[in-house]
Each structure stands twice: as structure tokens, then as C-alpha cells.
Amino acid sequence: MKHPTTDVLISEVGPRDGLQSVKATMPTAAKLRWIDALVAAGLREIEVGSFVPPRLLPQMADAAEVVRHALTHPGVTVMALVPNLRGAEAALAAGVHKLTLPVSASHAHSLANVRKTPDEMVAELARICRLRDERAPEVKIEAGISTAFGCTIQGVVEEDEVIRIAVACAEGGADDVGLSDSTGMGNPAQVRRLFRRLRAAIGAKAGAAHMHNTRGLGLANCLAAWDVGVRTFDSSQGGLGGCPYAPGASGNVVTEDLVFMFEAMGLRTGVDLERLFAARAVLQAGLPGEAVYGMTPEAGLPKGWTQTRVPAAPGPTL
Ligand code: ZN
Image (cartoon, rainbow, N blue to C red; front, side, top):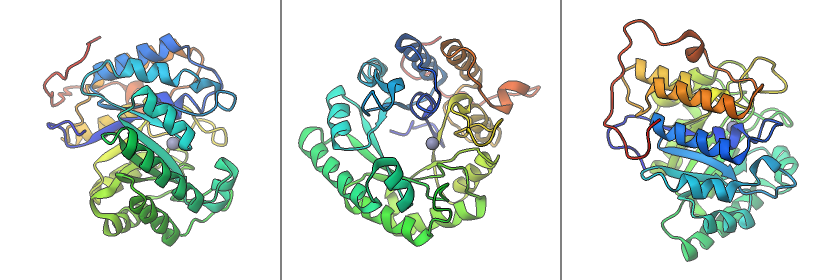
């Protein structure tokens, strides 16, 4: 659901990717306040949680409640991550607009993470798509090809394998297929090459760039993806989640910096930076003591900054 007056869709993944990567559990009421503040800042697609067993990820135990709250904001695409059919059933019952399923291109990572080979995950995706067709045909399904740019376990991930898995996901019924640099190993040349190949292979089903900033290349990789036609970008407010192996490095690309980059280039994101900074304060209040990242919020907006304003979207304001 791209906002008609924007050039870029920023898909905020902090409430899922960020919160599941930190040890502390944000109280449900604080999550709801944060989501409200993100909506007020203009974000129109938010990954609000994941449907996984609470014993594995207690931070996500309230996913259904968070989804139900997020659904009260008109015009916002409410997404959730599901690792399997069971998670998909729960997410569909909660009423999500869009499901995202991580499918690892690295055999070793896939086995370690979900105890399934990449091809077994593709088969799971096809089952989820059939369930969707029966129960909620309006719901969109995204496959996120994780470790697409490298894997911390197996190292190099063959590009042919990434494309093969992406094509299998598209054929299995996914509406779009994005590429994730889950380990922050990608570089701009690789990003250009792989997204070009992805588009050549699956056309309009080529989806989002999900970049991590582990080695400081998150924004450069997003810009490289933009250059070859990617228009949806996942990012996380405050780069929440960090990286235990790279102290000082944020996890996901920082939403504040990504919005600043595109807006400074004259590309409309629909996100108001000052309200986004206000949402950052709400996040910090909900997770006291947790490290948040981002250069733009630290430095502030440049003198004379004027942002292209988009018409106020529906939903509550701060
Ligand atoms: Zn991620």
C-alpha cells in the first residue's frame, strides 16, 4: 500500500526486528504508544511483531494484541513476521494485512535458525500461501531472503542460490520477494548486482531492501538499491537491536538517517522528521537504558531545513 504522494516506502521494522533483538521486553502499553507515535510521524507500513512461540521469544508474546491495536490506524499496513504455518494461522486470525516469512539463502543458517533447509522453507511458504488463499485472500505475503549477501556461519552465499530461492518463493505464491542483509556483510556493488538480477528474474515481484548497518554500509547499500529501482526499504527506529559482535554498530538501518537521506535528496517518504524524533523519545521511554543509534537525531536537522510536506494522513497525531 504505497502512499500515493510518496516516492519511497519506508517499512518500519523496529517493533519486530528491533525489539526481538534486545534482551529487555518492552511492556505492551509502551509498544502501543511507540506504534502510535510512528504512525503520527507518517510511517505507513509497520512490522509490529512476530508470531513465534513465547518460550523462544518472550518479547513477542503480545503480538496478537499489538496487531489488534495497530489495526485501529486507518491507512497503515500492519505486518507481522511468521516463521511457519502455525505462526501464519495465528497472524491471520489476528487480522494482519501482510505476512513476511524469512527464507534463508544459506543452508547452514537456515538449518541453525529454523531447522529446515531453504527448500523446505519454500515448501512452507507455499503452504502458507494456500492457507491465505482459503482464509484471507486479501492478505499479502512477502518472502524476505535472509543472509542474501553473506552468512556468519557459512560465509559466502552464492548469488545463483539467492536468485534460485527467490524465484522459488515467487512461484510458490509470494506477492513480493525482498533481499535481506541480515548479517551486515553486503556492499553497494553486490546490492546493485543482486537486485538487478532479482528484478530480471521475478519482475514486479521484486521487493524490499532490508539492510543492516553492522559495518557502516547500511545507507550506502540502500542508495545502491534505490539506484537499481528498489522503492521499499526496511529500517528500524534508532537502529534498535544493535549487533553483539560489533559494539557501537546499529542493527537495522536507522529509520531517522534513512528518511533524512531520501528527503535531503528531494525524494518524498511521507515521514515527518521532527515527529519521528518525537517517536524516538517514546521508544526510549519504553526501553530505558537500551542503546539507540542514528547520526541525524544526534546532529539535529541542518539550518534552513525544509522538508517537503505531504498531506496529513489519517490517524491520530501526537
Ligand atoms: Zn533485520
